[in-house]
Amino acid sequence: MNPTAAKVGSALAVLVIAVVLFVVLKPGDSDNAPSDPVNATGTTAATTPQVNEVDKQPDKPKPPVIPTVKFVNGAPQGGVLSIVVEEGERIRFNVKSDVADEVHVHGFDITEDVAAGGTAKLNFSADFTGIFEAEMEAAGVPVAELQINP
Image 1 (spheres, rainbow, N blue to C red):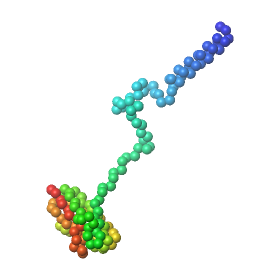
Image 2: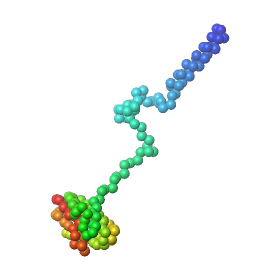
Image 3: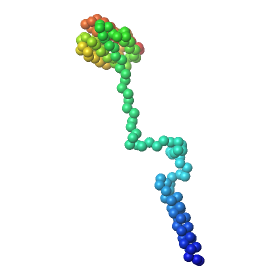
Image 4: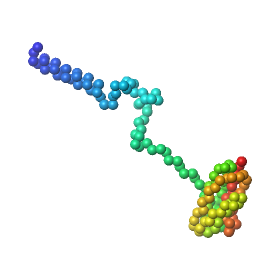
């Protein structure tokens, strides 16, 4: 065999070995992985987005929206707040006031002081059914009507 042909043959053999090694040892391949990129749910990997477990955060629950009535110049702005709940549920509402007073929930005999410029936060269980009034006690003005259904 002539020396030039031997060199070309050797170079060709090295090239074939390199290609075979690249195909066999390419990154991300596994001997026990299926040749079709299908994940455990049966969908192809191309259609399944990858999720970085470090970035995956559980969704935080959003705090409930608590209705608020503003008591300004002796009256509830926008009218009396209407709240309808089922028996056993929680009743939550706030009263912001420009004057100091006491919020009184009739029928439940619940009171909450509110400072001028402050907020009274009411949170209690609707233990029985009916229609009840919450008022600014000293002013004698209703700020909320509570309807509790069976």
